[in-house]
Amino acid sequence: MADLQTQFEQFNKTICLGRFEEEQTLRDKRDIVRKKIEDYLPAVFEKYGETCPEFYFRNQGSYELGTGIKPLNGDYDIDQGLYFLCSKEDYPDPVTLKKRVHEALEGHTKDVRIRRPCVTVFYQKNGEYVYHVDIAIYSAGNVDGKTYLATGRLNSLAINREWLADDPATLAKLLSERFSGNDRKQFRRILRYLKRWKDFNFSKAGFASPRGVALSVAAYYWFSPAYTDWFSGKMNDLGALKSLVKAMIDNFQTISWVDSIRRLTVKLPVEPNNDLFAKMTDNQMKTFEQNLTDLYVMLVNAEQDADPVTGSQSLQNKSFGADFPVPAKTQTAQRSATTGIVGVHESA
Image (cartoon, rainbow, N blue to C red):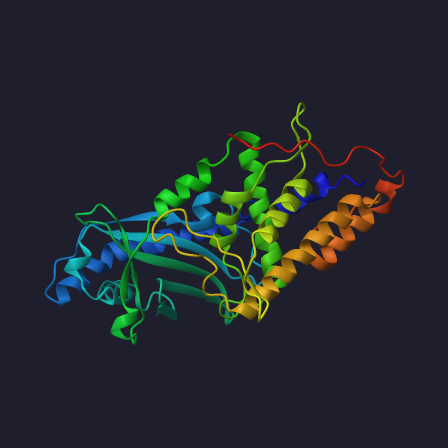
């Protein structure tokens, strides 16, 4: 059996956002956007005869969790939460706050858009998108103590303009505290592998690709740390990833025997407790299950392959892309006959 832990750890270092200068650039873009909002937003409200509510910012998404990866298409992103200390009743139309933020940022770049879940600032270089900052806008001054996300576009019908209960701070806390020590580090690596697999194997159009948060929550429920040697602390990323992928496949359920429709349901562990895969069509879900099955087969084959070269090549070609390293044949002239998978334990 091939030991591919070195290859997986090198892969993690290559795709991990923290290794690249772009991470500092993203922080700079974030800070510039924040400063522009702080400087211009009060005047925008004043223009409409309104008083700007107090507000604050929070990092969100993979940036906050430290699970961001280098994107294949070169378009880096950073998620920001903009929390207004006002009640959602103060702004019955949630798009109003989004319009105020959009106006404060207008002209900052050539492309600032109001999208359904956020306001996005796009940065371009030589006509290509290279960075974007997503600003999710919340009402955080409600008597029920909850935070609500402003959803809707400029031209959305009233029914599609909603304040949705949302609690990204608690979700981030749950994900970051689910494991500790080396188990947590492996958890984060596994999420990066899954995100690169997603980017390599799915179209970004519409909801064809599973969302990163859906994969993260699936891992929150079903990830178990894996070791080749528990006592020495030697981790087994291939084993942990294989176990998680198998658990995801096993949790698909047949909802229509007539049409052979199978779906995976992963519910957010905080409000609004929605199914994070709900927007994928049945056909997209079928592709998702098939791609997961293909990944599982590739992981099993790589694990059983006595030669790290061929095991790595198969993962590179069919699962993760060119950033997954393949050892030189001279390094593997003596094929390993050492132990394979092993101690898998669940963190308390």
